[in-house]
Image (cartoon, rainbow, N blue to C red):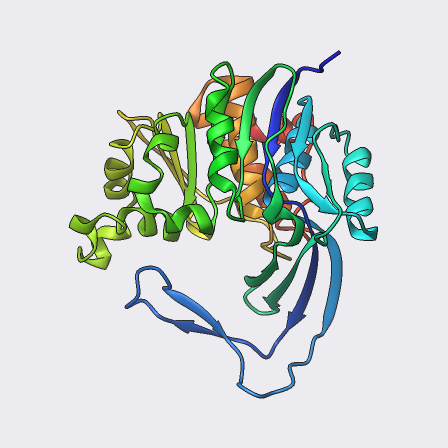
Length: 329
């Protein structure tokens, strides 16, 4: 008999190798609205790594852990290789009470992985991604599903996956598009945005989408850096609720009528990997499945992402619902 799920996450699963170094340099590149800050290393140099860690990652896998710990019946639609790393990801799902009903095994491609370069001083990072089996993801979900949470999709077949997602009319969609989707621009994503209940981007991604429209290509950077301006453009494409995250500056939301703001919560920052995933999945759980309230959903997202920053990797230490709600009071 087909199972029923509160949420099925769709997208990537990977092994993350995070390394810390003092030898990188943050470069101000504010003249480029899409790359306002860069991370640089001396060309040809041997970069000393102070410490490194192997953890689990991938947008759909990270979100699934967050949803499950918040108490939701969760499954993940991801694709891994027939290798030790793929089996480790399956074991991690089992450990976190995530159903593996829709986990696919690729007989030819390897499990995806990421090298994440983190500046010791800034705690921020740049990630080098090998998609591997993620590129070959196929849509195959059965049973009743309340929500799809779609993270970054890679590979030439991503539109087929999205077409299948929006074809399930009884299931609602929260969407955090990845690089490949962003490159399609607003016009290329129009039919998916029209079916999206909750759209998540960070500030740079929202700017990339808005400037994909010819009439907004040459607007001033100051105008682009204001979330309210970006929301008004995005709203024309149909998403009901839009959320823009902006790192340590907090997060913004718009429901078509009212603007909302949630400041970032102060915690000791150890690693920023996965902070966006934890915020977006927690907001989705809070708004769509628990509270129906944007203010409370923003707070839940801020709390869980703040605690995510205190550990290494994208999935620890994410909170349970009881732990998070004690901090919301």
